[in-house]
Amino acid sequence: MIGHPLQMDPERWHKINELFHAALETPAGERDLFLDDTCAGDNELREEVESLLASHKQAAAFIAGAALKATPNTAPAAAQDSEAGKAVVNMRFDAQLLTRVDAAAKQQGISRTAWLHVAASKALER
Image (cartoon, rainbow, N blue to C red; front, side):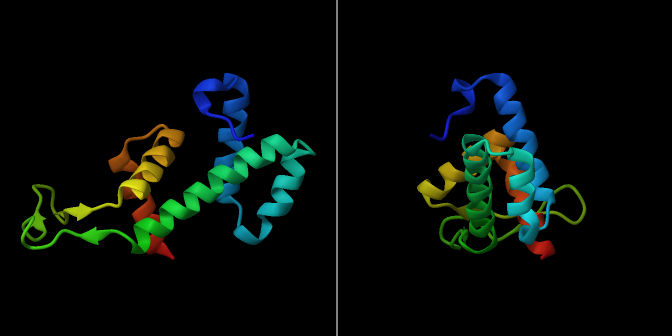
């Protein structure tokens, strides 16, 4: 069963989190072999890591294509921020997907805004 980090042994969560990040750095075509080697038959560990990977993939897909820009009636167009080269953009998020984004950010120990920035950057690099 997939556990919640707050209900899990801290050492176990640390191991899951480390493997998750290592798996993200592993090319997609090599992840199964990587998980076979690193999980060494620990099916529960593998399920936890695969669950995080699936959530990460869903959230990244959401960032890449499912965010809706705010309509002109509800927010002004992108405005220049005080930092050079940055723009303020208002977007609407589906509540269910936003919950996934929040969960992914929490798993990585970063804010929603930071997670969105990282996920959008990664999606645009492809």
